[in-house]
Figure 1 (cartoon, rainbow, N blue to C red):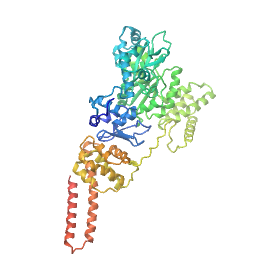
Figure 2 (figure 1 turned 180 degrees about the vertical axis):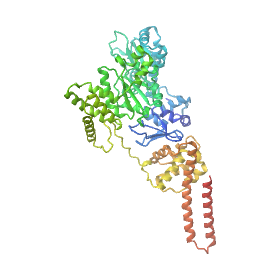
Figure 3 (figure 1 turned 180 degrees about the horizontal axis):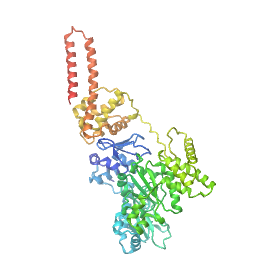
Figure 4 (figure 1 turned 90 degrees about the vertical axis):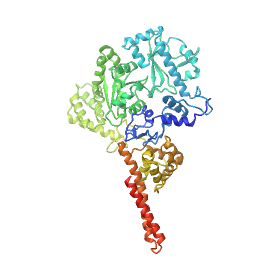
Length: 623
């Protein structure tokens, strides 16, 4: 068994890793000022971004739920890995060989999750190799008939599971994986005759997490004697949770974040068709309905807080597609982005559409998307006989709540008029029905006020209690100055300089919590230029105040450009020192007034001290 990773290696990996790059694999980050980034918190649902990342100090903090830490704790919480696994993963990413206290290398089974991921990756390589074998003709034919060549198969990592009882099992055992690991990973199943390959005689798609690691597989039936389902997926495992996984997200995340658009399709081949046609924001669920957990993932990647993004759903026009549309509409208001529906002509899915009409037809399908509300209204009205009074009244009752639920109030009048036109009902009657539906929504929400929470929107979770929190600090000018100066000192110590840092930490703090943080800075000031500056400060403060230090270290500063930030951090630190000098000046003047003028020695000493204080103030202003 390997020993502990050397502390120097842990620090080196952290120094070489940009935390924003790691967090950016999970969260769409935007600039929040010089050296600061923010996005939607991956640890709780929120409408506005309160999750801040400060790459320069290597820390993140959410001002909504209180989660904070460094790049290692982020990976531990997001991927449920151990500390050692987090270090080893990042070391591999930056190409650093780790050393262990006993001189050994990493243990071959250093983490259960890592072993399962390794087994999945080995299986993916096995399947890809088998796709080129003579026995995989049926798989290659299937791909070719759907317009996918070998380059497309390679791009998406498609493979073939041979029609064998345990060929994959034997291969992976030969690679050092145990039966327990293979069973836990979902690659093999157990029966009366022992363990056997879960996927046999099928075309196989690797299912990857957002970082690109293979966590499971989806396999399509090809042979007539295969009695299994059309699509067979990896079962729930410690690394694969289908309700949280979207196929293709690892390939699409960059373009989703950049374009603020995501296209949700229904299958693996649809994702392939869209990407090959230039719709590189397409993703699909994996053997389950589109749900709340999928929305949480997409909102983080979209940066879904401005309402400017687009979520486009493609549905088959058959009964199953209509059912899927209703489910998606039920969750629509969990997005801040605008939602749309794209339905191809003749009931073609994107894969068939590309095959029959080419790539341009797939692009036109997405361009011709219709707002989700318009789609749902038309679907609802299609269920009633609008040629009768009774049918029109029933349709109005069904459709009015849909219009009343539209988040953007500027859109409601237009949809109200459109509903009136489609029904052939007087506009005033439709307006009254929509208003009444809106009132019913408000009254059903006990927390509703002048701006009620929309139906289906999760309430913002209350921040957890914290003994020392930035948001709990008093807002008087004196405390604000102390807070802002400490933020500057923690975030940009090199711009301030050691001399000014030392002087600032010698000042008197009125807030006791901030005074302790100042003491931690004072004890660490010799390491202000080091990569582990913040870690050293954290080591100097009591544990209950560590959270406050991290908040101060990531909270956004008010200036936006590099030049402004340099001037700001020095000015705010100088202001703190100047406040101390003013206090000292007032104290000296009081003592001078009370001093006996006959005692020339005391009188002269006080005067010299006053001159020194004024000279120091003048020197600060000239910097």
